[in-house]
Structure formats: C-alpha cells, structure tokens
Length: 456
Ligand SMILES: C[S@@+](CC[C@H](N)C(=O)[O-])C[C@H]1O[C@@H](n2cnc3c(N)ncnc32)[C@H](O)[C@@H]1O
Picture (cartoon, rainbow, N blue to C red):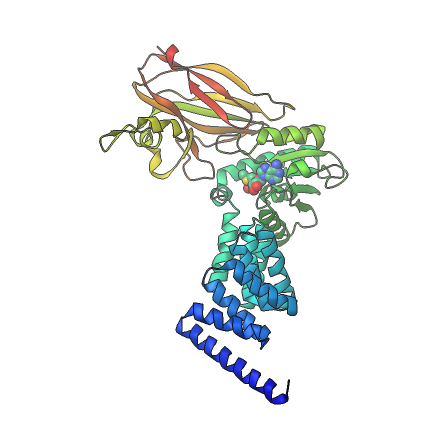
C-alpha cells in the first residue's frame, strides 16, 4: 500500500470513529456500536475504541458482549487496570463472583491507590460473605478518600451487619457484667493467677479483660466472627492487657491443646447463652470444651442455666401468633406458620400471667454430656383466660451465691429478651386447673408444647 493510500485509510478510520462517538453522544447506541465495530475492523486505535464499545454494551445491559470487549482489550494489554476493574464489575453483575474477585484483585494490584477500584473490590468481597476482608478494603479506600460518604456508610454497614443487634445492649447490661465479674474473680482467686483461662465467645473481650484484671496471667480467648475477634484483640490492647490475653478468630471447636492452648484450661468462662438458652449451641460447645480443652476439674462459668417461664394471656401477642378472619376471609390455616418463639420487646410486652413462675428446663453446664430431653410438666393455673403460650426467661447460676436472671418483672432493656413460646392454638384455662405441657429440648431449641387434651 502506498503511503498515500495508508494515509487515506487513517483519515477514513478517524472520520468513522468521530462519527461513531457523535452517535454515541446523541444516544443512537445501535448505530454507534456498528460504527465502533467498523473502526475496530480497520484496526484503528483498538485500545481506545474497545473501552468505548465495552462501555456502550454495558450500558445496554449486554454484559456478555461487554465482557468480550474487555477481554479483547486485556488480550492486548493484560495489565490494563480500567479493563480489569470493569471486567470485574461486569462479572459481578453476571453473578460470576470468584472471577469478579480475581479481576478486581488484579485491578487493585496494578492501581493500588485507586479508592474507586478498592471500594468496588470491597463491595464484591462483602457480597461473597468475606466481611473482614471487605471492611479492611473499605477502610483503606476511605483512608484514601476520607470525604467519601458512600465508603463511610459501607464501613458502618458492614461492621454493624456482622454483629447482632443485642450485642451492645448486652455489653451495657451492668447487672449481667457485675454478676460475671463476681464469678470470674472468685474463680481466678480459687484457681490462682497461673491457671489458664479459656474464654469461649470473646465478643468485645470483656470477660477476658475481667479475668486478667482479676489476676489471670494467661487468658486464651476465641471468637468465631472474624471481624469481632479483630476488634476484641484491638480492645484488649487498648486496655493494656495484650501481654496476657490472646484472641483467636476461630470457633472453639477449632482450638486444640498443643496449638492455641499450651495445656488444658483450668477455668472456662463463656457467655454464649441465647435468650432461649440453647440456640447459640451452648451444649455442643460446652461438651466439646469438656472433652478436649478443659482440665478434668476445671471451673466452669456459668455452671448452670435454667429456662424459667409462666403461662400467659395477651391480646397484643396473640396478634403476632394467631390469624383468623381477615377482611371477611378465613385465613386461620396460616397460623401453622406462626413464630414458635417470639423474642418480645417494646410494645410486645403487654401480657398477663396465668400461672406462677416455673422452672421449665435446667442445664447443668458442668455435665460432660447432654441428651435431648422431654418430660411432662404440670402447671397450676392461677388466673382464668385464653392462654396463648409461655413467656420464658433465664436464670443463670454463675458461682456459689452469684446468679443473674432476666425476669420480666425487673428486666426490660438488656441484651437478653424474654421469649414467647406460642401454643399452636389458644387454650382457655381456668384458675385452679392445671395445664400439662411437654417440656424439654432437642439440644438446640427448647420444646414447649401443650398436652391440651389432659388439662382440666
Ligand atoms: C453473647 S456474646 C458474648 C460476648 C462476651 N463474652 C460478653 O460476655 O460480653 C457471644 C459471642 O460468642 C461468639 N461465639 C458463640 N459460640 C462460639 C464458639 N463456639 N466459638 C467462638 N465464638 C463463639 C459469638 O460470635 C458472639 O460474639
């Protein structure tokens, strides 16, 4: 080809590109796409045209075609940070998360101080459930762009998403904290400062800090939520106890003697009791600790916990657990899906007792093995009314003379809520009768079921 012919081809290609870009700007995307493809066919400014084409295709939600354009660019320039970034976002949009993470990771490696790429990488990590890595990347992006409100929001959102809503009121629950501290002081006093203390479920590190303040020289803590574990270690250091407390970001079932623990622990402190005692898997966890991590005569705090309760009536709570006629239709069959357990708070506290307090289930946490249990409990009815279920709370036995409970008469705003265990249907009871219920647990949930046919 003569120089003139080649110059002419360039002029034509330049004009075709200008036309395609004008069409793109005017919003005629189909014509613009055709134009870009023509320019590409001429081999003119390929690495500049491909991003324009890919962007246009992305705008048209043609993700697969956009991906092909980004890949074509990456085949020419494998380290093209924008292409890797956009490819990652497109893959994410397509739900191809591992590939999206790989592309965004490469984009960030090439352009390490780009807060947008880091922020987008964090979004994909968060969506993939990799919260700790995500928050670290959001924090880094925020350090690069401190005024970015989106990043600030994401850092808060991820932090709070990893922590259940009850965690902070639980930490502010002074009677709970004081009871635990009294028991921990007594246990460390008895076992001596050299006794190895194991804290399962460190949370903020509070109980470990109490043990160290009581004199324990070595506290091994574990916390299975990595973001919380990292925070606990930070708080321990801020309070000056990093030389005595180590927090492992692991579930207790992944601790081992000879690894995280030098020897079997002589004191176990662990507050993993859910409002209904069992759903944080306290039995599995304590059994595993007894079997593998504790000395035979280890002190265990808490040493026991009981589910307490009373029979209740409540129009307010009935609306949360039963449905009947609605707008003239019979929707009562839907009651089959009513919550079996309903944590109660706020306006849900309007209920009246129909029996005295009874102990429903007691867990001896010093026991090495627990089986599921079910037995019959006869509840004397003290007031007449439609019984809708049992309101349940906890009594925790921490040490000789040290206990804690969230009895509804005096406890409303702590970390533990009372729980309504609703009956499958309303049972009309009268003062002086008894109501028989089946009580027990299947190791992870309380079982409370009326034996309605026997009441009377
Ligand atoms: C109720 S909070 C108590 C936190 C802290 N110990 C306190 O008393 O303030 C329980 C914590 O234990 C953690 N956890 C529960 N079971 C665990 C286990 N088996 N191993 C490690 N962490 C666990 C949860 O993620 C949660 O952060």
